[in-house]
Structures are given as C-alpha cells and as structure tokens.
Length: 509
Image (tube, rainbow, N blue to C red; front, side):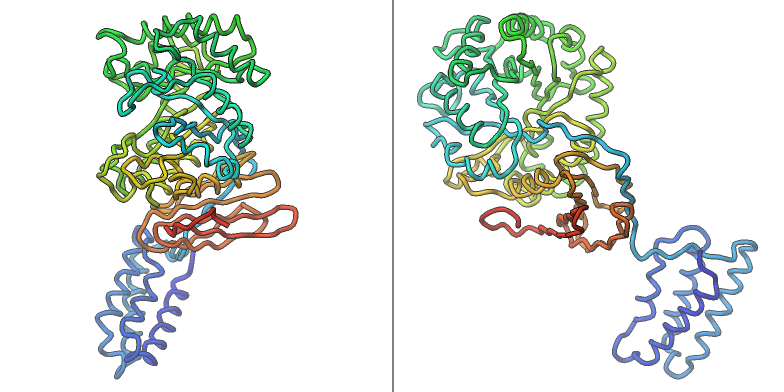
C-alpha cells in the first residue's frame, strides 16, 4: 500500500516535469500516471479522477502551474475522505510477478521427447536418412516407427505407384537410425496388412518381433499394435459397425501373444486418432475391456485443420490441452487405469498440410510457439511421451509441411524442440501464472535451471521472476516471441535466448 501523500508527491513531480517539457513531450503527465492503470475498486476510480483533472488542466500548466496542483490536491483529498478508513492505495505495479516454487517438482519422463520416423519411403525421397546428425542434436528419447503406412505396409496407400512395405530392410535402417540419434525404439506391429500384403495375424506380428531381435540383438523395448483403429471404418479397412469392443478383441489377442513371446516388451496403445471426447468416446469402452493389456495409454492429437491454425487459436490451445490431459487422467481413473502412463504418440498443430496456410499453420513461426507451449504443458502435467509427426518432408518445397525439417534443414518447430529438450530434462517446477496473455514455465536439466516465457500479445511485456534463484529477475518479453533464461546453479552463469520469428540455418545458440 502507498499513502495518498506519496501519490500527490508523484503528481507534483509530474507537473514539474510537465512545466519544463510542455512543448517537447505533450501528454507526458498522462503517460506517467498510467503506471497505476489496472488498480481495482475505489482506489482505481480515485486515480482515474486525478488523471482526468490533469488532462483537463494541461492548458493551464504553463501559465498557472500551482492551480493544477491545488485542483488535484482538493479532488484527491475529498475522494480519499469519502473512503473513510481506506486511506491507503494498493501498491502500483508497473510489472507483474511470476513466482517459481522449486520445491514443487514434477519429474520428467526419460522417454518424454519423441518423434516419428518418417519419411522413410524410397518413392518419396526417403529424406529421413539425411537427418541423423540434426535429429541427434535435438535430444530425441523415443522414436516411433508407425502410422497408417506401417499398419497397411503401404498396401492401398494413396499416392504410391506400388507398395513399399516396412520389411526387414526398412527395420534394419530404423534400428540403425535409433542408435545414431540415441533414442529408444517404439515399433508398431501391423493389424491390417503383413509385409506381403496378406491380412496381418498374430503370427506375422511375432515374426516382425523376431526380425527386430535378430537385427538388433534384443526385442524392442516398446511396441504398439495397429494405428488409429477409430478411423478403420472411415479408411475402408474395416466394415461398418467395427467398434471399440471389436478393436479391443483383436488388440487383446495380439497383446496376449506378445507378452508370452517377449515378456519384457512394454505394450502401448490404442493410438486413437481423435475419438476420446465425450459424445464420441472410444477410449472409455476400450479401457473397460482392455486396460489390463496396456502399459501406456497412447493417443494422437491434431487440434486444427491447417487453415484454422491462426495465432489466436494456437495461443488459446495450451490451456485447452492442459484441460484435456486432466480429463483423460480422470477417464483412466474411472476405468481402473489410474496407474497407467499417458502419452501422445502423434501430435502436430494440424493434421493436414494443405496449401491453405494461416499464421500458425505447420512450418510457420506461429506453429513453433504452439509447439513450445504444447511441450511445456505436457511436461508440467507429467505426460510420459510426446511424439510429433514427423521428422522430415521432402527436400522440395511442396504443400506437405508437417515435418520438423525440410529435407535436413530445420523449420522453426525443430528449433524450439531442441531448446526445450536441452533445458527441461530432469524436472519441472510449479509456476504461478498471473501474466496476461503469456505462458511461463520453469524446470531444470541437472544443475541448470531454465525459465521459458511465451508472449502472446502484440506488445512487449515486462515481468519479475521470484523464487527461481535467491534473487529476483527482471524479464522483458518482445511481442509474440519466446524467451528463455538459463542459469547454472553451481557457477551462477546466465544465458538469455530470444526467438522472435527469425528463421536461420542451424539451431538456436
């Protein structure tokens, strides 16, 4: 709280400045007085009244400087008297304060940072092979080989002149790639077609597992069974009427055989495309019948079509994602699966890659800001894995822009992915978030703490960080930008990284 006399002193100083700068800085008094903007209740009305008097009396300031002060004193005193016991004003805040609680910790999963192994198809340039070095630098921990192409083994997939199955040769390349980038493999086993085009069976799934074992010397630590079964009817891969009970029946048969054949393999699923919302919910009935066969519950998330992915939509999606995670955890608890880990094994801001682009469509800087907040929210909420679709598109510039790389050249989303993977590796801290239209997160990678802030407004935003270290830190956010403060707790060395849309070759320094 600040005494009324202090307010009047500031006004007096303001008038003094105004007299000296009337012809140089018109409106300076009003500008200085706005430091109290945002105060509430009667104290706010009091200062608004004072500002009005200053504005109305400016023309008298040059000839009668004392008159304006008397007017302000009189008005403020009478307004203060009318408040009876409220003789103090709230402390005017020129910046907002974020409080970090480093004792309220959420551990980060050792498999959180994921990606999807795509594009490996030779007819589509197989650009994945050119990305080993930059993807290794990104810090990917889990690499999924999956998707509709792998489920169908490229039989009946659009735009291919001939099928190109994910056979022994492709599996060998995948194993080699995971080793090159230092990631654990998540191998999808087909529910639709075997490598020869025949219907997939339990036996063909076990044969794929054995192929992996022969090539790598071990079974994959994680497997999934099929891809997006809630879309099988729409894609023509199952007859009308195929439902969650049918999906569970086939999943259970495969899972039972896999656990008997390779007991150490962890099974994830059901990799639903999007039908896990109230009114169109495959997840609840699937868990009711099949939770016992799962080690990790996995879903896919693409919140927009490309043309819908505006900056405003992207900025509003972070808290929607948080609410979804909480709802899903409740769904798991309601069906006896509260102990199951939750993961999103495919994600991107949009599921399509059409020519119709918007300010946050895939490959844009807006999509990178969405990526950063999506990752940070998932980290705070303890999600086991978040795997984006996908690593790389073709080297030529064409409408398909979901990849984090164009060929081997990083797009903006790849830059922020690496930034978070470098800085948030071991734990996240609870952060109060009073800042309007900004997202703030804090965490650590061992002895190095990091604070991430995303400004969602078109103006700069100052704020103070408290509790992050032993002293407060002042931060200034540029409009619609990303900011990261990195502090080594052993040496005290600090580093600030800002990213405001400039795309360049290579990663952020």
